[in-house]
Length: 263
Image (cartoon, rainbow, N blue to C red):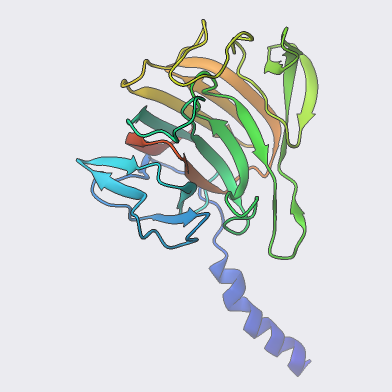
């Protein structure tokens, strides 16, 4: 009995330190316009250190310089919210011929670098040119060595390029690794730098694009510049950290906040 009580006493602080995900009751400014308080960084090459200041504040904007691969993560975990991100591309690219690339990751779970040493297990809302609003499950490995089984389902229809796109009333498909394209992704889009698909709703290069991600229970709905472009349900996990990627391309953010869901 004494040993049991002692074990409970020792475990109590651990239980208390694992804070439950927060459902915002009022708007939460993740980026305050002055500094990166409330965030931690992770870079593939330097881990939790950021000697090059890949993530910084420049003229009141959250600035990802593009010098590396990794992310900026919230310290807290969240659930049941609408994430609002307003971003535009900078000048720096990775030197290649393909589209500028980044992502907004929700429901970040498990250790930093759990997926390939670079990402956290999460659901990615794609920000890449021509693909803004695509959804990708990113599975990782937990500290116990077991897979963090990120997954979601959606109603889809295959396009002429055989890629699954979200369509109201489509066939239910479960995604555990492959990409779910937004509903009007151009099948002829070549994904070349600074080009656009014919039905893209993202803003032109140099202009601000507004991405809203509504996370309601186990459902994710994505809006780009006010247009509903994607939806997934049976999402697992359904809560976690919120992350902003850097993937070799410069990015600026003027608004990054969480809003409570409307009742």
